[in-house]
Length: 79
Image (tube, rainbow, N blue to C red; front, side, top):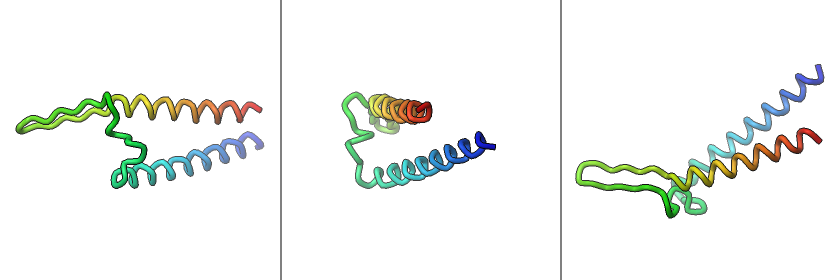
């Protein structure tokens, strides 16, 4: 029974984190927090009839941040 409570707490924390992340992304479209989406190294091409954008460096930065956050959750969960 105790394991179920821990899983429940984890799901609540992850759900709250997803809500906060979603709000940041929605607000970021208007305010461009920390320049995400327009970092040097992001690939952008605009032709006459086509445009292509791939945020390569932004993806790498977000991946590193999420990895660090999940590693911290794991580390504090073991203690």
